[in-house]
Length: 504
Image 1 (cartoon, one colour):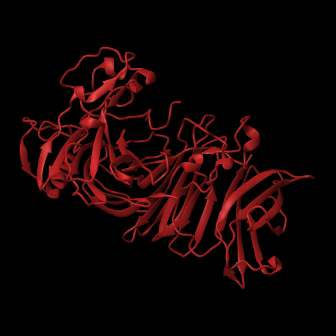
Image 2 (cartoon, rainbow, N blue to C red):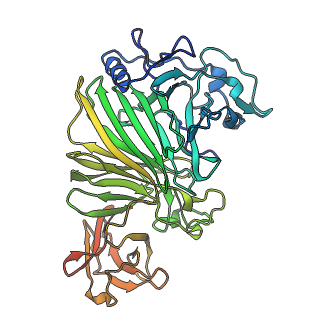
Image 3 (cartoon, rainbow, N blue to C red):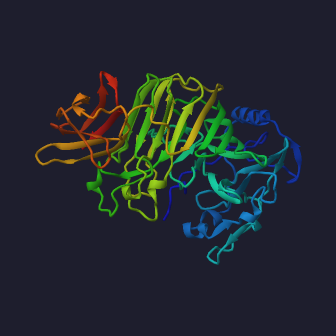
């Protein structure tokens, strides 16, 4: 099945005569001292020059079919550091072609020295379905994959992939790839079209024997900006990334997205009736979770709307946000191939004050699960002006999600026609130690922006052991209604704040 890691929209990358975004070392074995300042300076100098596109691989490579592209793969025996017993990681490479026409630069940093890692076509294995293509100087690797002994000794399992624009993905133990992250988002869902910055070069620091993290430096380039990134990737019970970056603006950027996440939501029990499918749900993520600066914990179930939807959750000093995959049982999806119950959640934690802005959620209609249709990111109120720089510092955790935060979590939302007129919505909460046995003590806060809503009924769900809040609403001609619900006890929050947007 064609998965969403095949990015269908890539922009040409920048280069300039003085200092090129795809500049390479003339001597492949040339060794020089590495300093992060050189990546910063390269980004700064690039931003001061006009954006120029890079040379792509030949058309024979970009004209590969998906099946042909899958017929070539990297032989792990040729992985970077595969012959080293004094390092804890391995790095595999991806071939160019198809939707990945622009090679990237890759450098190894060992004991403070940097060496170019040249493209080696002989490092790939292929089937007889792979055509005979020209091998010339335009070829280069299109991405990289990190492997380590994440679960068993002497078994190097992959846990992070960088490939396509500034996209990267990671997984925790016993998980499979799902949603993606990006280095930066620009003009997402704008009528003028989105700009996709690209990672054009990587410097890989060789970790020691007992190291549980890998440090990667990356150069980002796009028509609007450049950036110098340092990403520390720790692989334990969760895959944790600390991302530090400096962005340099080539021109004014009015719509910038920080820590963008991209995922897929097709259907669950809120819109199951729209899809004739043997599975009860299909999604990589089922909700947006926000810990805002005011101390609220907000859960917003995702939707697959009929038209593009953009939601902005205004905030000042956010504590964290992310796209979650909360269903964790096989029966939640009943899919033996896609295994959606094993997809990771991704959680963003700022390491400094991000000030005023909004967690922004973009929901795009989709009728197929092969397309990413969900984007979430932080949009600061302040624009980035030409010549200015912006420093970023945040953690990005890939796993089952952050701690509960002391409140009952929303574990499921369902919607559909009731026995009589109106639409019934049910919200299931996970069991919680603070939930009283007598649910009549619990206050139900229910609000709607339009239509008519019932007062709601709170009952114990014998299947989950938690509480279920059910209510009925009548749109009364409204085509869009915003709902808010929360359980409280003695005027204090007992559950997360549940927000939901209903549309015709």
